[in-house]
Structures are given as C-alpha cells and as structure tokens.
Length: 80
Image (cartoon, rainbow, N blue to C red; front, top):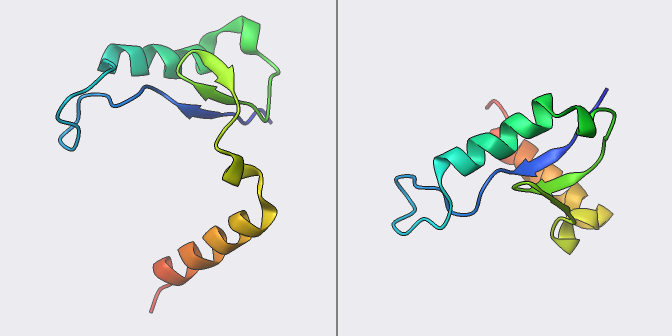
C-alpha cells in the first residue's frame, strides 16, 4: 500500500484564513498529483508541501510526541 502525507497549500482561502497566500487550485493540483502522477507511483512514506517533497516538522519524527498525541486524541474522542 502506498501512503504519503500532503499539506496541499499554504493558507488557502477558507473561512478562517483572511489573507490566503495559495489558491484552492494550487491545493487541488497538489492533491491530484499524488493520486495520478506516474512519476510518484510506488513512493510511500513521503511528505509533500504542495508540489515539493520535504520533511515534516521535526516533532513528527519524535516517537514520544506521536505516542502522546495518540493518547490525547483517543482520550478526547472516546465514546463516553
């Protein structure tokens, strides 16, 4: 299975972004590229910021931080 992560665009125009620096079209292009671009077929475990492959925030690679995020998420979303 191929799994990648994508930040589709920076500050696309939404209700919470008053001054966008990217367009919705740029976000759609980045998303579609990961789905249909044959040059990316078979890539997995990568992070893309728009059309550019890059590294995520360093905390994303911290096993303890990921475990804490999971625990808090499970606590906050538990059926109760």
